[in-house]
Length: 340
Image (cartoon, rainbow, N blue to C red; front, side):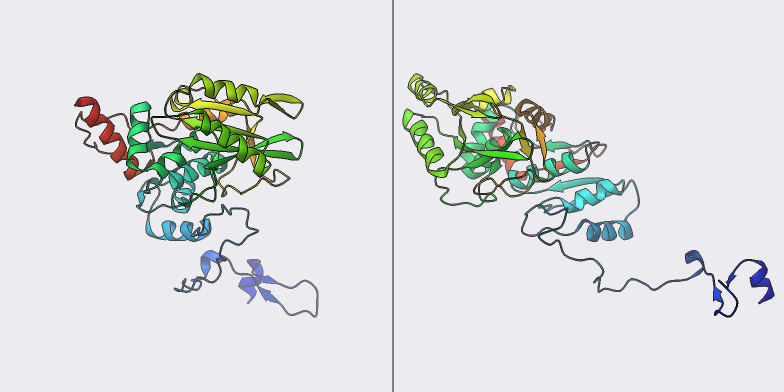
């Protein structure tokens, strides 16, 4: 006891109180973690990390799994990465990682998530269309995947969380800041067919009016006709944040890929599900100019290697990667067409 007192391990705040024994964590074996991890709570509606993705897991859960089963520098593979919680945790824990998902929606959710929470993270996206031929191949392969990708390229979010089915003429939504604490929203309509006409612009105009949106963007694969351009001009302007913007704008995939962003207020970047209608208050979303948002998306490089027949080369593990197998199929298809 005297030795412990001399070492400062016996603490007594004042005479008459019960002495206490000072212990350090590295001297105690502790309690092994059981298979019932009830100390990590699910992601609730008020959680700061909540994305709106239906199967989202807490980052703390994946951190524990990765930290106890790998070492810094190891490669973590999540072949069904969803909203990217595993790759988020792997990035935080200094692991290399590869995330794979079949939808563009999930890949872009993760890309926006990492850009928002870990701006220093560097990664590549494999399988994203890089040119009009690749975009057309994706449109031919799966129209929904094409709609989600085109909406994301325009700076928007898929309507209804990317669910397939009737969309009422709304393929995606744009949310943008119009002033301090104020925001508004716009409609994105995507047409991947080779034939376009003025009825598409008229339909978009009707959707904007019916839904109470501020503006609308028509994204097309084919070049718009002169009549479509005239109708968009006659739709007039809308004033948002004391600035006039075209109420209806048309952008081709070629223009978006070339860096011609839409003309709109600062876009609110978020990985949450696109709401049916925008709500007041930007919360903790980050506002970017449409050009900056487009540049950010263009920095996410698609695959550039591979042989003429479209066979996929080995992934470079020096950099983290997001892979969309379905998009890779589109890239292979477009290469085969060009080689033919």
